Length: 209
Image 1 (tube, rainbow, N blue to C red):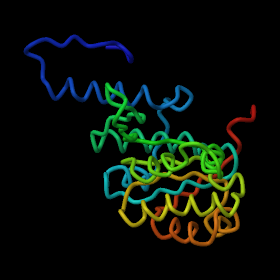
Image 2 (image 1 turned 180 degrees about the vertical axis):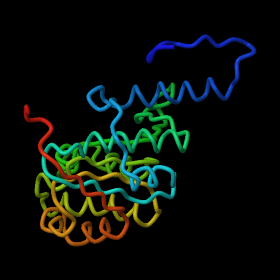
Image 3 (image 1 turned 90 degrees about the vertical axis):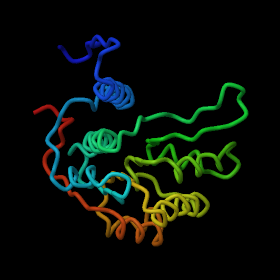
Image 4 (image 1 turned 30 degrees about the vertical axis):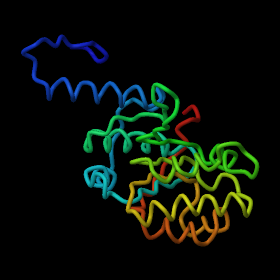
């Protein structure tokens, strides 16, 4: 069977096999096409994904173009497979009266800070989605220095996940020791304590060789 083919399932099919197939389709549908190719997975990342819902944080750091975002999505996919978590965005019920938050939430740090600015509609929902998702992935944290307001809201997100031991993936060009001046001392301290640090090295893969 080729990748992407739909297997035939009948009344005598293995329900576990069908469930695994559904999960794999959901994971592939969630991960952007750019980051679906298989790449080597460092042992620290593999161990983090196997830890499941008590995995804590994963901090991927390195220069531009070293594959942090790709590895972040790879870690996300492995975690979903190990926990049998179907990635799902926030949604409302049939009558639009009850809102269900996302099971997995992925956001670029710059977009998150924009959503947390004073006066933005539904900023509270943004915080709650980030706090309560089974897995949160913040990409490229430290790329923009937040205001005092957004810095405080970011801390609310990180501290809540820290307190409840909820899994978090963070990518950044900055090493942890340089993060405090960009996100604040408290958020940087929480991340340093809760995260497994995985440094990435090498040339910029985006540049033609």
